Image 1 (cartoon, rainbow, N blue to C red):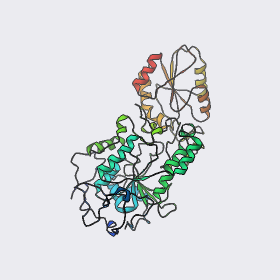
Image 2 (cartoon, rainbow, N blue to C red):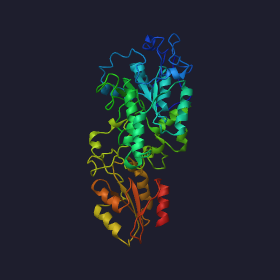
Image 3 (tube, rainbow, N blue to C red):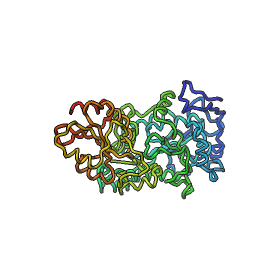
Image 4 (tube, rainbow, N blue to C red):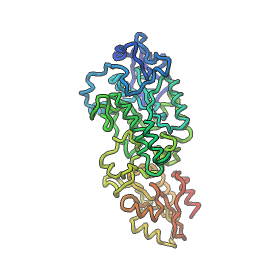
Length: 466
């Protein structure tokens, strides 16, 4: 039967006319009646699995149906060409494919040996796409023990909405106990998030993936320009191993890699998909409760994660393969993304405008020493590789245009690399970007206290002080 949405959907999301005749799952028919499953097929009258097959969700008792991902729950008859597949070629072939096409390709190719990684955020779109294909699918999630109450409630909503059982993976209790007893509950605020993420997220994920041959993620290129701008729709996982072990034993599918955030939300609204209530409170990227907060106007969506860190590459480790080797050289030992050099030569400069003055080290030092200036200054301390600086580039340039001819000079100073120590000691640099206002008759600059970086808020700050 031909599938058509009841409401119009964005062309970039449901691009092709997708035909789904009675879906066939040859690998499911080989499963014995005694097998236990921790996943379920899609629900809904328009996408039914033939009744002669045992329903994936046949078990009614949850305690009997939920098993670790690492357990081999069924011998799936997957595509015999998996081993020989050239995924770089496949990624190029599917570069312009819709998420629905990519999802179906992944599910058909790997059967029971693939699962969707679900974080409880807008990646709910992946589950909706999987349901629309009509094929059975598995969903797993990492329960770190530190998620928001709303996220746990959302997991329950998703399970009921789709008629599925999410396979939860948990951190090793002994490891968590050792970390907390030795360093406390909030050590990540002092020495970076990487150690906690390794214990609570990366190692549980590694265990989960050892029971699979492929996994499906909700990564998008626009989520993090610094680390995700080049992700393909399918790839050999560069960081983790699958059930067969060794490099190249796990395939990673990114069906929404080429979809932008607003289009994802259009799709969720059109399809009437439930969403995490935290989104309505300003949260976009959602992780653990202590490490996630709402974003403000002018901020990038990932700026709500680990906000206390001056990070070039804010990845928890689940997608560390996105970080190129040359970029990793700029990270310190804690992996907190603190630049150790003056940046890469191939990173283009930002905040380029005729209304902006680019200050050298001597220029900013002289400006700071002056006790009486002929005019007030607004200066941003930035690093061109910082995606949060990149996110506010448009509003800062517009602000400079608005202030042109008003008697307020607008400037920029690149404060990473060799200039960073000076900026931290003398210019109140905490993290990028930092904005300073130099009054006309005062030597001490005033640090912009808010994280709202829209034009109106920045202009109000300037007008209140000049």
